[in-house]
Length: 453
Ligand code: UD1
Ligand code: CA
Image 1 (cartoon, rainbow, N blue to C red):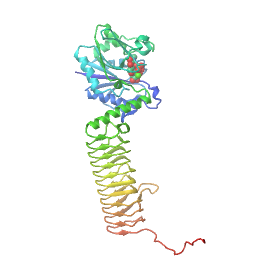
Image 2: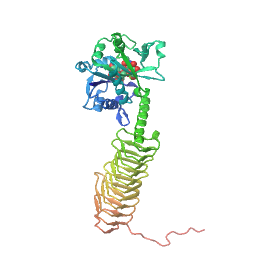
Image 3: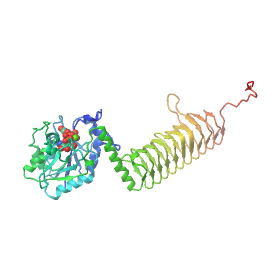
Image 4: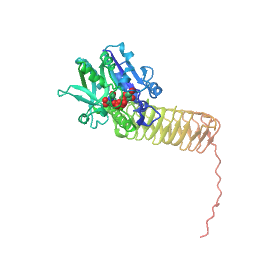
C-alpha cells in the first residue's frame, strides 16, 4: 500500500513567544516536527510533504533533504494548507495521511492502526480522535445516534449542545487520496474564522455517500504544542516513554521524574542511572555502569563498568572500569583510558589520559597527552594557556606528579620521572629523573616573639 503524508507546518505559533519556530523547539533532544517525521518513517510513509510558511528556513533545516516542502504563503486555514499540496497528490492513488507538525507525541502504533482501519472496510477517510477532559478550543466529533461520524465542528462554530461533546478531532487523518482531492475543491470559508477548514472535507465526503471512520487514540498522543507549558508537558511524557524503554531493556533508572534522556542515547543493560541525570545527544553508555546522581553527559562514549558521579562531560570518552567524580568536569576532546580515577574537583580538557592513571583531587589537565600509570597529585595543573594560544603538555607512562605542580606548557615529562611537590616545571624532565623546581625552605629560629603576658 502506497502511503504518503502531508504535514501541516506553516503556522505562526505566536503563543510560544519565541524567535524560533515552535516546530524546532526540542523535545527529548529532537525538534518537535522531527518526531512527526520519525513516526511517519516508522510506518513506511516515505513520501512526506511538509507545508511550510512561517520561519520556514528553520523548519526546513530541521527536517533536512529527505522530505519535500510546499510553501503556503498565507495561512488561510488547514484546508487551504492541504490544497497547496494538490499537485503532489494528483499523481497518486492509495491513501494520504494528514498530520500536524506540532504534535510530537503521536506514535507509529496509532498511525498504523488508523491506516489498518482505513484499509479494512472501504472508508473514504479515518479521523484520529480522542476523548479530552477539557475539549475547549478543539474541533468536536459529531456522531449520529448509531455512532457514525457526521461532521467535525470547530469550537467557535459549535452550538452549546455540540460544545458538550468531549470527543475531539486530533487534526490527524487518513484520506483516500483522490476523494480528498475531490472534497478539497469544494470547501468554502463561511465560518467563524473565515478559513478554509480541512475538517469540512469530512461532511462533504459523507454527503457524497462515503463512509468516514474514527480511530480513537489516547488523548496525550494528540496534544499539540502551542506554548511553553505544553512544551514542558510533552517533553515530560516523551521522557517517560524513553525512560520506560530503557528500563524494559534492563537499565535501572532510580527516579525517572528527575532523569532526562534524549531519544538518541543508548544505555547497556545492568547499568544504573541515579537521580538528577541528563543524558544527551549521541551519548552511549556500556553495561554495568553507575551514572549519577546529578550527572550531565552530552555526546559522551562511556565503556563498561564505569562510575560517573556528579560529573559534567561533553564530547569525550571514558574507558572501561574508570571512576569519575564527584564534581568532575570532562571537556571536549578528552579521552579517559581504562581503570582511571578522576576524582573530586578535577577538570580534564582536551586531554588523553592513559590506563590506570589517577588525578584524584583538585587538578586541571588541559591540552595534554598523559601516559598510563601516572599519578597527578592534588592541586596540580597544566598551565596550557600562554595568554595567546593553548600549549601542549606531554607526560609519559608512570610519571609521578607531586602535589601542587604547575606544568608550564609547552613542556614534556618523560616516563618514570618524578616531580617533587610544589614544583613549577618549565623544562623537559628526562625519563627516570627527579625534578625539583621550587624555592628551598628557610627557617629563622625564634623569629616569632612571644608577646609579654
Ligand atoms: C485544527 C482542527 C480542529 C482540531 C485541532 C487539533 C481545523 C479547521 N480544525 O484546529 O478540528 O481539533 O486542529 O489541534 O482543521 N496550519 C497551516 N496552515 C494554515 C493553518 C494551519 O499550516 O493555513 C497548521 C498550523 O501550523 C497547525 C495546524 O495546521 O500546525 C493546525 O492549525 P490550527 O490553526 O492550530 O488549527 P486549530 O484551530 O487548532
Ligand atoms: Ca492548533
